[in-house]
Image 1 (cartoon, rainbow, N blue to C red):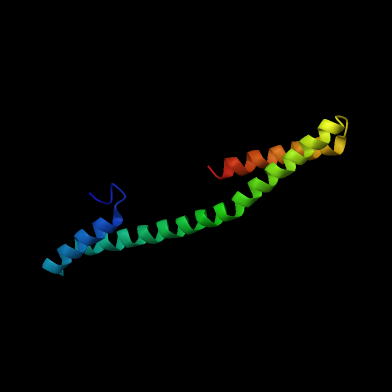
Image 2: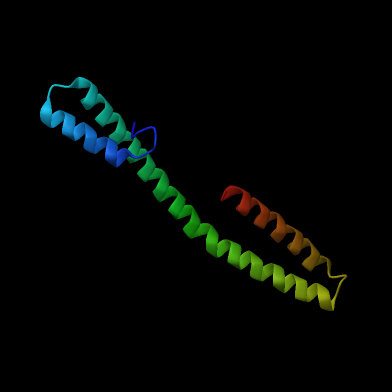
Length: 102
């Protein structure tokens, strides 16, 4: 029941209690192994997401700063094609980063 609610630590505690009473309970051993594997997978994914956020948070801040710079350039010179091109690229990159981080 705890596994269905993603409460793997509580599930492991229940299986530990079952195995204390009956060390030969294969069902509890199998479920404990599966819960342990899930916890390992969750831990790996959590670490990966933390790493992605560590990378993309500064990137989005830098893109926002660059977009503000291009806005300032275009305010002074609306025909600056370099600034227009870079602004479009920055907006596309920001959209891709925000889509990826969802």
